[in-house]
Length: 288
Length: 252
Ligand SMILES: Nc1ncnc2c1ncn2[C@@H]1O[C@H](COP(=O)(O)OP(=O)(O)OP(=O)(O)O)[C@@H](O)[C@H]1O
Ligand SMILES: [Mg+2]
Image (cartoon, rainbow over all chains, first blue to last red):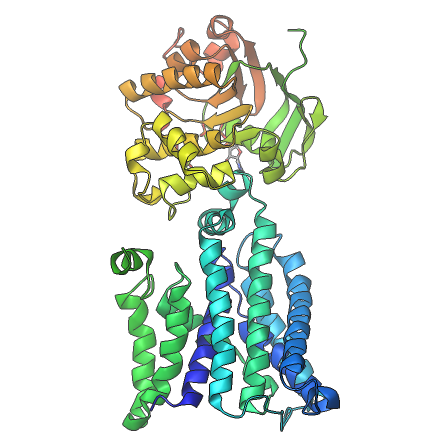
């Protein structure tokens, strides 16, 4: 049941979970993770289908071209994140959530109505840099490892404490010398870049890409990764992304009931584990 | 008083809609003094703290720090100049440990220094506990430890003795004196407990309905007829308004 293709999707889920987690760790709710993933996917899809040298013609294929796509996707996502974050994050409150919903919608409408991006059907026949799921697994695992290690390092660094301080009480954090605007912007930018990098790999893996990747449903699903897994430690959203991505597939044998079971897990998770499954207290017990 | 003041307020005013919370308030703090700010509930004391620390912009007037205007700077910039504060309604980083609360104040990772600061307030045994789970008195002390972590020149304390019992109030008062002397701190303190303020402060300012009605040494302020009328309610002498003692935990 756990075939390579499902494992790839689970790793994508874990990465998207981390992308939602990063701003949340600084008290900011961004719903644009699927939007930034969509953007990253389009960067990969457009470059590898429109630029011959990047889409199969040696010698740039596959690794150098993939790295170039990742770099470009990161730059585009960063620019978009700054465009949204610079005006919005100066305010205190839930404005980022509202602005990122708007960003998702704008991206969707622009991408759907633009012939350059394939309109409603999107882009087909995206070249496959890796012959089988194992290659994608390896690439995504490297990305997840890097992202996880970064989160782990941040948690022990003054930056991680500053993020937690802003999350707990932004006003008190400012009065304790923390530039809360900078911290929030940094977390949001990191979230955007991570989602876009994931999108690059996902677009190649799925072979086809369209604007529906960034639907509102997807925003809620990625948010559920963090609600279920927990937002107090980076392992929480990783677990949430892995489990909640696998669950619908693993439940396939029970037929239509699987949606009910999936819904029940999402509902019961927060009831049984209000802070998510992974909490600092749990980790302390497991890894003394 | 020929030295220029460390902090000077010049004609500070603040309006909230139709409410004049502060009107034309001016005074200065000399380096090294313990300066008290008293006045009835709603007099504008916390609003003045908010203006000094950049949380609230004044509608008019200037805040001079070492003779440079700082009004309009964001709170984190003002903090970095050497002004640190506590909050009347306690604002700790609840999910962080006591140690981490102090390390946020330090702005760096330094366990040893953070533990020293906690020990100063008798909190070393609580270092690993989450701030949200502390008893009330410990929360007040932790907030002071966090504020002191940045080694400020001016410490602003908003009702630090509120909710403490008389014994704890005395201890706190002695601690503030000791810290001010040892760390060369200037202290601006709001507190309703008048006897404590008379004994602790070098000078006092009295606010009433947003106006400065008295300024001077405790003895002079104590016998000021305006103060007796407005603040002490005609009871005369110190202690008359001690009962107002910090029952106010209004959200700011
Ligand atoms: N952000 C705000 N918006 C509207 N009104 C405010 C605001 N902050 C303070 N006020 C009002 O300004 C007046 C002064 O409030 P402030 O908190 O400064 O009083 P205070 O002297 O600290 O009183 P207390 O002793 O009760 O703490 C009050 O009437 C209060 O309701
Ligand atoms: Mg007050």
